[in-house]
Image 1 (cartoon, helix red, strand yellow):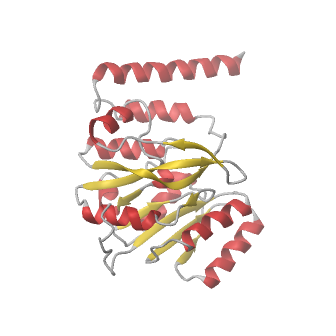
Image 2 (cartoon, one colour):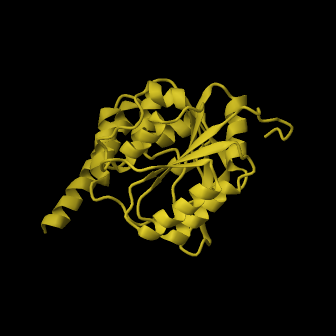
Length: 263
């Protein structure tokens, strides 16, 4: 990346941070990593659907100290996709950065992604590689994603080619494809990326780690049902045979899970 590139003074990012019931120490590490970013011309919309008193107490302390944060508490349960759509509807910046409340941004994440998008107007979404961390914030794995073009497109045919909490995207592009699907309770990010690809928007992964991603073994019980639904609804993007093979594999996973539950 060209180190001499200057970020425009009027550039601004909205960070979308949905919060449910994370551990307070994880939430604290996440928010501190945002506050300590080398690029500071951002604002953060916290969409809070949690029940932990200690978390809301901590968030209120942050709100008093740092006016870049704004707390939004929905009137009804929205889930992740609905919460993100609410945040998008309240955003007025060109760029949106996704972030999860148990992950940690590396210091230059926002600056590097903003510089990239301002230099590469044809790219609508930029993600990055990442480190997976455990509960003690220890790095346990390096996760690499294809950069762009055919390799990334092929990767998307069988896996999600972007780490959702590492992404920054142009608000206008996501609005044009209808934002997140609020009916999904999983795979909402894959659905959004596939619709963007289907509509000709370009995606790129910066080939350096910009995020510490918290290892999470929990997955919604209907995760694979959502993946199957998303891939079926967004079919005819990839080569037909591999696409059908992937759908068949997911269907087999669903049948195996159903058999185990019934058994």
